[in-house]
Image 1: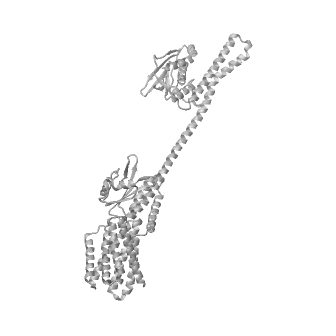
Image 2: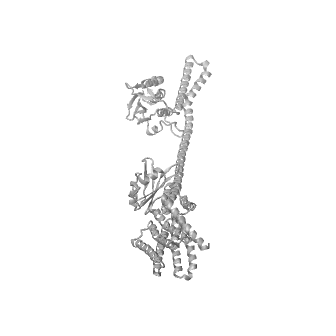
Image 3: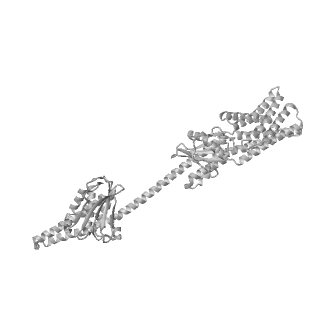
Length: 614
């Protein structure tokens, strides 16, 4: 077998293989585009098979004529494939149909066609192939990815087939150059078969390589996105990549909202009338629920959402692909095409790859945002903890200052009286000795009271307090008993209400509050002190207890330093109020209440605190 024979067998094998692959694809995925592809390669396979069998049968002439008739149908069927990308005018469609029928007539009725017939058939064949090649080239310029590459190969195959036809006809018209042109036509036809094979039915490894190349482009575009804009930019890049890769005229993203339990459409400015929330029916709901790509054409399978999207964008076909990883599903990508995709399987596979990578980027963005939030919360916690430690350090300094200040006088008196008693004991009378002993005891008791107050203040610093119903009448009575010597000395008059409203607290702590308020009222009240006690129900579920004295009152500046945890060394100290009111504030705060004072110079002072109602 010579080189021409080998080339013929190669060409025939390629077209038979293509016919088988496209037929299998049609059986797996039915659709108009796949039917047109299978039909085109079917007539090429018939032509190849008839030509291959011709030398081995007595019907050589009729088989060759059948091969020519089948081959002449290829341009018309190719024109039908063009209709998937661009609307073919009626004149062009009928001209191609007429050219095909004319060619069939010539082949049937003329054993040796005249020159005019050959020229007419050639014009139909070449013009249709060139037109189809130009359309495929134009579509390939606006489409990237696997589809773009396949369209360029299909366009190349159509152009080569037109060139092969011209070479073959030239050989027929000019027999002198027929041997050379025949060999050249075989070479070009072989290239045509290879181009069609790689365009219409590429091997899987080649398709995967093309998909990875498009994915690499997408990742490079997403690499420069700023961290704070990663999620929005990823979705934007996904829509751009989808339009570029499959030639869809509109690309939308619908994300799942856990609160509403629905897919919510991220509507671009170009389509402001589209709904924000989707019903989740039809192909969109199916793709989301089953988590796999779906394709639907108008009107079957679109559903309510799909029909509205198609009508709004002027599309014909929906390609819906989940944006998800095994760990998390984000939503769906909706690509809307003006016609049925010629290579729908490859388009869905590429979109699925882009959507999966987008979901990975969204997962990373969400994890990064969560990390940033945790970092911010940790920073706030550290700042708060640092401020708390700083406050505690300042409080400790103030505590030390307060202890030294408040213990200095009674301890000094205690030491002084004891020293005097020790040194002058022989010369002192019994009455003088008893008086010094009483002063030592009084100073010791004063020191003990201060220490008890400091311990009370420290114990009020930790933990939650179990609140109990307080018998306020007994608590006030106990506080007055503690101050009875002072009250008798100052001839204090105390006016209490007939009854006390029930409240919640801790009786030893509440007693300390009353003791401090009463002590201050006695010390800084009038001459003699007249103290009125009372309680008022508040609307916020609390009771306000108060102590009103008849003293000179406090200025606004003096009131500003009351109830501070400890009076700082750089701040003036209100005489006698510092430590006691610090205790009051801390105790009442731990009991769930508040403290305060109402006072004007010359009008006395009313100190109050609140407790929850029982």
